[in-house]
Length: 82
Length: 82
Image (cartoon, rainbow over all chains, first blue to last red; front, side):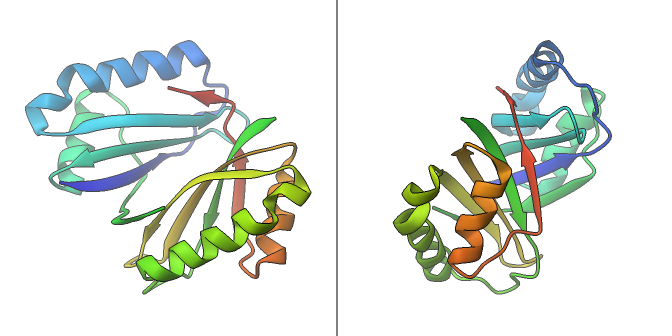
């Protein structure tokens, strides 16, 4: 398992409820892809959302986001952490 | 206090030791700016580093990073979190 940070752009105006709903949709299907979404942070002003996950591959992370209707714009493995 | 995510680009090849050293340098001076850096994640391949902090302002976060020699390329307040 590797840790990943994925980034969504264009989410201007996202609300706390919408972020929670999107996260819960991911949690509902993540197990089928072997992924776990740990946390997510959103900036409604710039429309940026960051999602931290553990997954077998970047493709697995992206598949979960695609299945739940919010494809990520960027994804990076982040093997280093402090 | 607001939570912030800042992003550094161009850090290709960063090592675990270098990430730790940079984080510890931030921790050593953050109190003078009222900032606390919680976690940081790095992708040595793309050269991307994400830092999660709590701070009174974006400027305070940037001042800490400038004082420790690694200015951030982007910073976003992330008031929403799951």
